[in-house]
Length: 158
Image 1: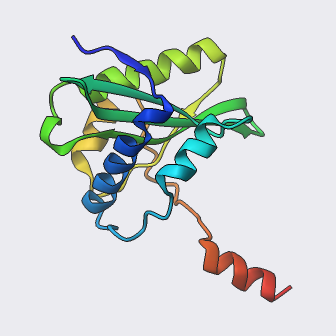
Image 2: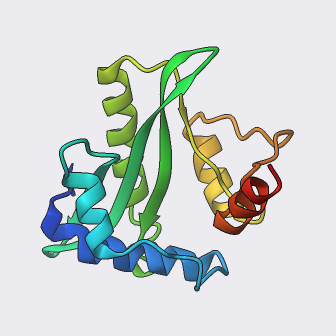
């Protein structure tokens, strides 16, 4: 059985590779702007912005779960699961379950009232996986975002 662990700074190059792999899977290969250096700085600086769990297979990181704290005006402290990634070659081997288990245990330990994340509506295997684990896939909500250009446009109109 594989054991999850907290990622280290030294894992960030492989974490970055898996982030890029996910972006390609999600048909957004050019959307990743973060760098390995930024992951190290943001995850291991004085005020870490995220927590990352990893699972190794044959001494190589093959799965990650990246989370960060949020605050809900209805619930209080919650956690957002930004990414749950398993290398394409090892999907279906239980690594996703191991990582999700670790995230849920971490959230319980922290006393959060909710763990939330997004899933693409066409990613049926992921949706089925999450529903099987007891998650509520809320199909009546839309994700709203402003990218850097939209932020600049908004500010320029003020």
